[in-house]
Length: 463
Image (cartoon, rainbow, N blue to C red; front, side):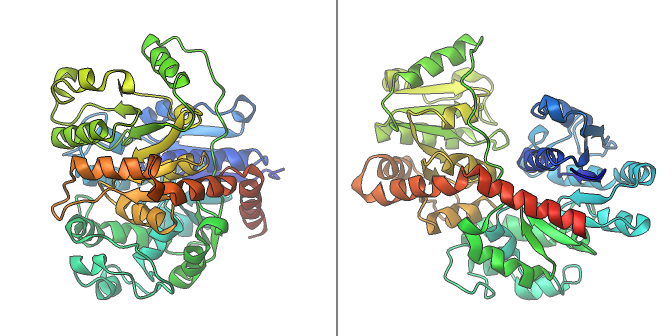
């Protein structure tokens, strides 16, 4: 049991971060450790349900965000804001530290486990003498790409490592092996700006990370040696602290449930009627806001591929209603070959369905984990942030095909169609399909990933 241990969890305000923090919380609570999970009130309402037998051990604590100019009222997560305006969310998050400080003063927990972005956890940890661990929801490859942070004063040394946006488009010199993990020239400007330029919070993203790392007892990371051991072994050298993989938290196979939503019932019936591993699932996540041009190009690519598909689509940012979401006549031309499902879908249930054989998506790390455990071939189209690094990581691992992207960041329907056909049916993609099936054994191995959690719990208890 947890011997009365109390751990405070502090995730960043994006669901690609919040959900892994919740998975880690559940894993720790199963061993009897008491968890306080701090996030803004609306985010608490949006979290998946905690298993009933663990509700006494996981306390969801409201961390209100102060009002900030530029942040829409009620915005508490990146899903609530337009892409590019998360600097105001970072500012509000930074300004929430007095509430966190009061909570720590009152509770005096044994550990604080926090994300990359709270800039004040190190300060509060020192103030109250409470050890802290940084938990990265990113892959080891992404964390290794950032570079040797141990000697970095705020901004100075890292600018020597990354002297210009163009430098982000080359393999880091500290990689001890061949790797394609780097940004492309059209991706570098925005990334470089967020790395080094202060935003509305007064700090750059790397400032936040460096402050979060100060005095850390360790870095925990959502990965495993069996998948990216070469990058994991680099991290202790780059960060000069213990780096502890906590496994992948592969979601358990969902129960097939009765649905009361007639729209989803129709979609599910359509899936049930398709041959095994024949359907491409298409989804660019709840937070990826596509433009109308991008939606149209994806639609035409799916049409040209002549493959069956299920597309979970959010209306594009420039769309006024569902009528102009898709190209004129698209659905009549597709007929029963594909389904466009506007709005939320149960993603895990879809990925677990026997008729799904491939996934066309943005290459987010969480979605990669959900996909590989079912052995699906991946077609990746990274659109923002660090997605390009994980996309290239998956191509290097032989698990994905990346859609060709033009120098201005645009993409063409022909490239989409060709990538999908190669991944799903053509001889040239056979190796990817086999590799995905082979790697699924590692990703879905619950005993393996529990052993990583056990190692992390041993670290918490013995440090």
